[in-house]
Amino acid sequence: MKIEGTAILVTGANRGIGRALVEETLSRGVKRVYAATRQSMAHPDRRVTSLTMDVTNVAQIREAVEKIDALDILINNAGVSPFDDLSDRRVLEQQLAVNLFGSYDVTQALLPLLARSRGAIVNILSLASIAAVPFSPAYSVSKAASFSLSQSLRTLLVGRGVSVHRVLPGPVDTDMTRGLDIAKASPESVARAILDGVENGEEEIFPDPMSESVAEGWRSSAVKALERQFAAYAEASPASEASPSGSGHEGKSETITREAHPCCSA
Image (cartoon, rainbow, N blue to C red; front, side):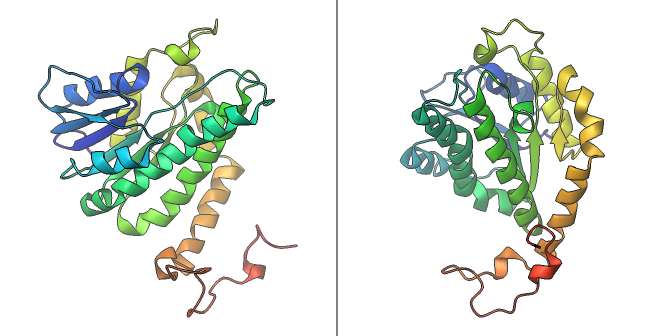
């Protein structure tokens, strides 16, 4: 997929990686970029359409979707990352509301448009998705959940022509990491690498020096191989055949037995 001539929506588009992504898509000749933010955002480029959308507000998501005629790429970038120690359940719930369910709700609302264009979903995650960071464990939990959600969506949507890309950056110089005295990549360089990865069809995108150092190990890992193995089960028992109500198994034969499922075997 090429960025030039496409319509793209970026959540959390007012700062950090989100803002850098808006600028980078414009430099690559995007036809339209929808900049979704909690408060209206002005931009001098006429190709930018501002959308007021809190990803935790289903009504705002619905209203925003009604303003979109066509969409090729959805970039789920909005996120929060307070420091915590897992002692307050409310912090974990907030993280899940934004970083997991926010992305889920936006994706579901825009899925018909993405399926029509045979487009792409790009979920901005973190290396904390695969290795928790001790100073923000609730964030790590939420990003790990979003990592798994992205994997499941990838398997379920391939038959509809929609690709799903997981972005796994290390520390980036944004408001989220301002208090961390560590080496950080610039949002602009990360945005360029993200869009390069989408154009190259990379399933996992490692957009900075720290994340790139683990990229090859991930791509050749047993975990990645197992993901591909499990994805094959979707071909044997496609979700599209499931009943819209109940367990999804009514009226069809079970094509995958318990013995065939290594994840379920005793």
